[in-house]
Length: 639
Ligand code: DMJ
Image (tube, rainbow, N blue to C red):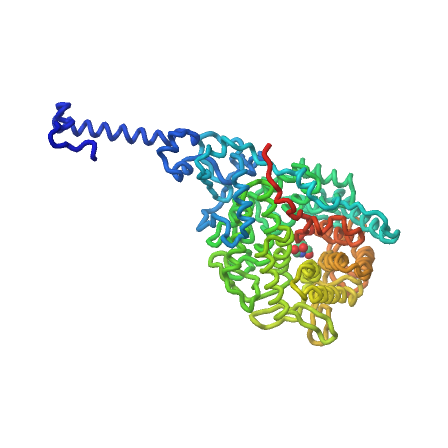
């Protein structure tokens, strides 16, 4: 201690004070106590204090701060700041904290900008310590400028600016279609009204309608959340201009949609149906209630990502935040189609909240997927959230894999074609699929087989029939000389799926169809003969129509409408059937929510002009909820 050393020729400071040894000791003790007290007091100063910033390093300042990363969204969703909403998640082991270095530069810049724009958590008690949803903590920006809470007003998504950026009116504006097309569209609208009215009458607030027994079904997929059909139907009602019905649905969301539930939910299903449905309803209407519910629900999903790799587990308790893998998923694995189908919705949660945490979670998933070695360039369906390695080599473009591929091409489109990493992943995956899984039957039908450790299973699920539409969507943007190839491939697959319908007695397709032992595009097992009002085949008709305007797609769509009316319409709604190969099928007594979200929406759009929910402006999530293409970088604004 230079200042206390005795200098030659000078009397010592203690001698000058005339102190003896015990007194010196006491004096030093007092001095050091005083210094400790002063230093400790620095932590009690507000972050804005210059004095504090002068003496404390930046990291210590941030750690002592009570601000939390989570809560730009809290600024816009007041309920998300309640104590009861704070994370009750299991300890976050090796939680990934930052956006992937693999994230495209523009996205990373946007995340940083969003973080800068994020305001302080609303109603956080001064001086209290709060950890953000998802266990994130954010330091003040190291700029030397006053901390964010002094400078920034709460984050606000600029809805008006977004609406101005759309290239087409949401519900279209082109007149002049032929009367037959119009009549068909009106018929589909009537089917939607019938499905909704019966749900409302017999099951409002339950998840699905049971149209034979005229009651509601709750099920166990949504963790105690109710009203899956309401949320799934919102945007279809809006697009079809069923105004009164839309208002009924909106009122239910405002008054009765309770997010404080405590049950086991599928992360994937909650995301695609509820978050997707709410986000779409918000973007279409600008009604804040949809946005705030989506953000609040999004935060409840974050604890599922607290795994060593950041790959979320499939099941989450929405009350406790505990998450785990499906019992049937081998060795505690997570499912490709589940953790790979969050990207679109989570980017929008970040856009609307100003909170980068959602985007960080899904960019980290991409990072893990890019790191792991792919057998023959293929993505198996089961991945360990602990090690980040594949657990089983089963590859399928149908169930368990399907919408992962869909979200790659749609991520690129939604980024206004800037997310080139997603495009490359899609191109590479499709190339591998084509090389290893795409086959032609003896009868000349193109299909996509499944792959089990190198052995092909010559089966195509109904779910895999979305791929005609996906390949059509990507075809326009395929590399030099590949466009026509992919248009043809999409057309061939869509044709095969149509054949699976055409070869049945009901003209509706089975859950799975095979190409072996002399069978072509038909189910061979009793357990695969059912049809549960699924959308994938009409989804592909809709994309093929928009791409080619070949009238056969409208014709095929109309055949489906007639078959639905004949075999699935019952007194109080629409029901799935147990066997598509009999003209007197028995009903499964279930009107699935995706029938209103997807099947009827895609059928309706098939008979609309292309500017209704134009593909220039919108991408459909895997539940057919339209999410906007980012034309403007959605510049955040401050109120
Ligand atoms: C829908 O919930 C979604 O399309 C999902 O991706 C899988 N399929 C069902 C309907 O068949």
